[in-house]
Length: 351
Ligand SMILES: *Cc1c(COP(=O)(O)O)cnc(C)c1O
Image (tube, rainbow, N blue to C red; front, top):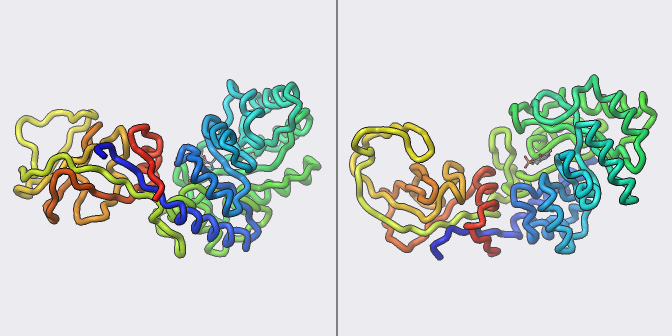
């Protein structure tokens, strides 16, 4: 084996997809399954669609192209749009999230020359300070977009809890809902979709938040890992065992717990401090920061992760008996999942 691998349990993802779809539709919400954390991995995308998710969203066109080429039937949503890619965007994505008028103008030109209609969701900034128009700039932008040929203004949306860590609470959702109603009234148009946010919106919804005009969520982490991203709490009734990161032990030795000699930078420029807790049994795994965010691994046995360099994960194995050639298993968090799905050195195994 040698290389680390990631075990994927599709039935856990299917369970989460069916459960979340049911809970959301009970509150009048449809869902986009967000596939970017798994690089648009085709078996997972197929699973989501077979469970009734008919919109798949990804931030990378390459992932959308791969999913479409493998024959997946869904409405594909691009989560961010670059000016340099407008031709490919209208060719491969049915819908895109946007916040720049110059980009939407170019999308319109590209859609016109391809003779297709492209749907645009306009993103509104509500405080997390990543993408989105400031609310006061929304109405003039909508008026411009409504004049563009081959573009359908499909809705508005917002994204919170990604950069600034701002909670999508009742107040933020009410603002989005009011903006949607205002746009329809002032600009005399209809917005089929009002997209309230990502997995961080789960608690708002489950806690009885009032959807108002909001009728869509874009879920990645909740579907894949069964947890919400505000405090990383497990969502009741969902499975959190869809992914297992497995690494092979390549060294087991009893060594001191504190590095000795003159302390300088480590391989990533950090100067670290270690407590001296005496001698301990330490293990090395074949795998490192090129494969996974080691700090995002929760061990499934009585070991702990001390750290990692590019190709080694260093383990405190003082509480178990362990020998070279055995494997250790871990649950990845979102960052660790993202890294291990992205690394070509991590084999993906369906179990
Ligand atoms: C990544 C992303 C999502 C999904 O986020 P999760 O926390 O994984 O649910 C939704 N919307 C946008 C715009 C994104 O970039």
